Image (cartoon, rainbow over all chains, first blue to last red; front, side, top):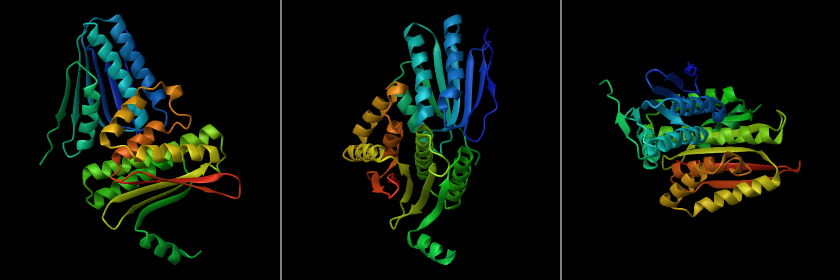
Length: 129
Length: 177
């Protein structure tokens, strides 16, 4: 059992929660820190550890809104880990919720999805009228 | 101080927001916040507002990264930033900073190299750059950000390099959303 992440988030960094027991990692909000690698290396370490030590499914629940290019690069590293695990027969999946008024984030999610063969859902959130 | 001529100049160039001075991480966040609020109040299309914000972040963070990498002091680690709206209603984001001449030339070449690419080619270049190992990713560090800005622009990016008496040069980049 590895230490779970529970990062509160800030103006430029997303909220991040991991749940080792449930096999779940969630991220919400904007991500544009100057040094994305510092932020995401702990997330990448958690995903790597989970995939190595457990054989249970891993689910990513994302509600990221805006990502700068260095955050995009870090997210690609995470999706690459999931893809490798999926190729090796593991059950992994991503659900990315977005505000339908902001189609830019759906386009970004679609571009990530192009390089993934595991289940990757991109779903508009219902907007209160 | 002649504020009126400053104001006339801004109005003439349709500048909505501008900044000149040392740029910190928190200032980037604060100005970004003001920019988003302004775009919302203008009822900008959410996708256009997002593109303007994204280009602003890439430009200012590139400037910060470069100044840090060069070990510039506060005096040289400054940015000049302007967000305007052109006659056709397009948002225009410009940012400039002091650079070593050779770095500036490389940047201008990189921008000119992107100008001839269509949307499909820019996407391919973006994905290629994304997969390059971190330490090889362009000596200026600006590789991925430049392609991203080019993809969000409705016209090719414009780069300009102007030599200064100090021996350094002023590099400026303009993106029209």
